[in-house]
Length: 511
Ligand code: HEM
Ligand SMILES: *[C@@H]1O[C@H](CO)[C@@H](O)[C@H](O)[C@H]1NC(C)=O
Ligand SMILES: *[C@@H]1O[C@H](CO)[C@@H](O)[C@H](O)[C@H]1NC(C)=O
Ligand SMILES: *[C@@H]1O[C@H](CO)[C@@H](O)[C@H](O)[C@H]1NC(C)=O
Image (cartoon, rainbow, N blue to C red; front, side):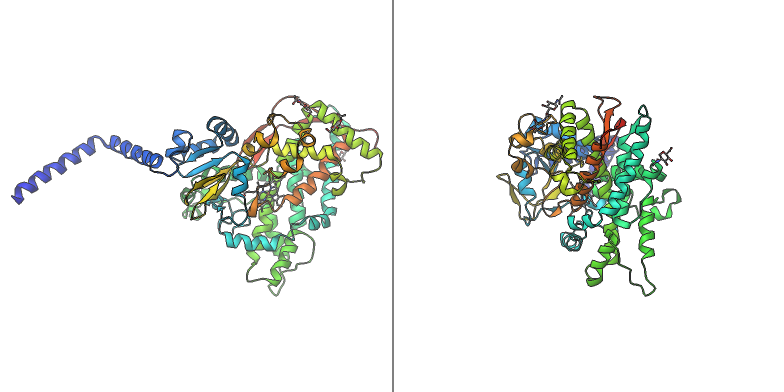
């Protein structure tokens, strides 16, 4: 009996084996399909609409990020499916500002996802990349003062020095008014050099040479491109850039940028013979070193370095992109440009502007403020989503419950097109809306700097330098687009990296 049974069993398994061999691909396909369907239908998120591919696999997110225009994909998704869309088996994208208010509420337990852990430096996370909430909070506490507006004011001199350099470069273009000036590139170089000054009291030298020194900016762009894509599937990072074999592969050595080299040099220079650090000075590095002195246990020199170094990476492309968008949008609308110029001229004639415009003076130029806000509304500098985990016990977002394990995403490009807040003509760049509608209400729904406990710590610097530099350029030059109406080329890596803002510069006669 047992023998017969075994024989039957043997022949059955032989048959199964033969079937498997003959239909190997079919079986793989079936199991992939089963897994995909399981992800789609066994999930508590199964009732949420979205692309079929997205509900079965993270491939949709990866593909969309890879395409370079995930912000446009997200706008289209929310137009098609409504304010709540399933963008991955366990991820929901929210398009309404009501949902964003819930997600960014401080203390509600929405913590960063592993998306951020992919961003370098892997082994010494900074404020942006740290995903352990307690550690993030600790670092941020020590960094708040060094990053404050008051401290940025103290750095006026080096920042104004950079602005004067920028003016010199622009003046040289204006001398030959037929010469094409790539204003976008100059602003990009300027933003990087400002960060060098603010963080390390050093210029990286981009603006002076008017060139991307050693391809460093391009390098950052490439790194961010990787971060954005692999951040959607962070487990794979270990197979790719953070492959443990990498240090042994000569052709795959990390390539430190000019910025990183200068940062390391500056820290070394400040090291004293007794092992402590010289913390005099007003730059970010010095101030963070001072914060370290009283709290060396909780706030290490590694933390100091990561934060100062990270500032360059978080603060340059973002600020450059915002300034490029501003000019692109203003210069493409003659009536906006005329109105803005008139406001600045008036202030100038009334003696309300210093040699280099102060931050306070800039605040009084209401139309300028509306132009800048409107640029940040319609083209926020972060093109990817902001990702958070739902707290373990689950949570209500915009009136509906989501269980722990769900990840949520919001994209500034989508939120800033919420018609209930900004009006029906959200697609139009129209600074006037800031005078017609409740500006305070609209302002509280702008997310170009993120929100909640992860609100951009560099926004004071960004606003400080942009307010001064943008007005200074507008007051000194008459600017004409080389290609009116031509869209900027751009792609969203993490930041929106833009190319093609070419102009003719002409010095204004009266000053
Ligand atoms: C116009 C310019 C800027 C824009 C549009 C911008 C945008 C943002 C956004 C949207 C976030 C939130 C990211 C998230 O939660 O996923 C953020 C965070 C951050 N930004 Fe900025 N940023 C700008 C300038 C700067 C500057 C100049 C610096 C540094 C000097 C900086 C440093 C940081 C850091 C360290 C974080 C992480 C904050 C945290 O997680 O607590 N940013 N920024
Ligand atoms: C501007 O042009 C002058 C004359 O060609 C030159 O000496 C100067 O170095 C230039 N300045 C900048 C910032 O390029
Ligand atoms: C400029 O905009 C302001 C605010 O909307 C408006 O009051 C003013 O009339 C405009 N001026 C011009 C010249 O268009
Ligand atoms: C130009 O700006 C004005 C004022 O903001 C606005 O009404 C108009 O629609 C804009 N034109 C275009 C083509 O965007």
